[in-house]
Length: 171
Image (cartoon, rainbow, N blue to C red):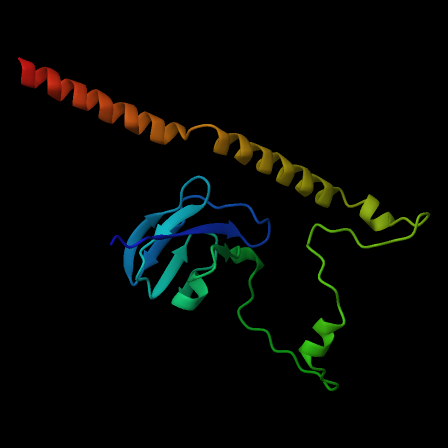
């Protein structure tokens, strides 16, 4: 019986775009780096995994946390060392979450027919980011449809080496 490796996707937590060349250590040993699509294979018996990339916060996850197939890394520029919050009228966070419906990040807030949001109309950065995200998704769709050029070149090199070895054996 062959044990299967778990494949994980490593993404930027802000933009949700896959990150390439993230160093991955499983159980303290180097496993490899993520591909251009942000994918990495972890061994079956992984107890903990550490994900590291320059300009991102180092993330160490336990076996239970790795069960999810997507890992999000936060950019280092958006992090704070310590935050202390003090409040007088504390409320239970569960009661607040129960009253709020889930809206995905790119979902627009509901509004009436003649209403408009001037701030949203003037938010050129969000428009640009959404355009870039659509372009990235389209590019990844095209890349997934086509064969990986690096793997293709690797296979061609292996075939050429085999041909040369066969020629040498004949002579």
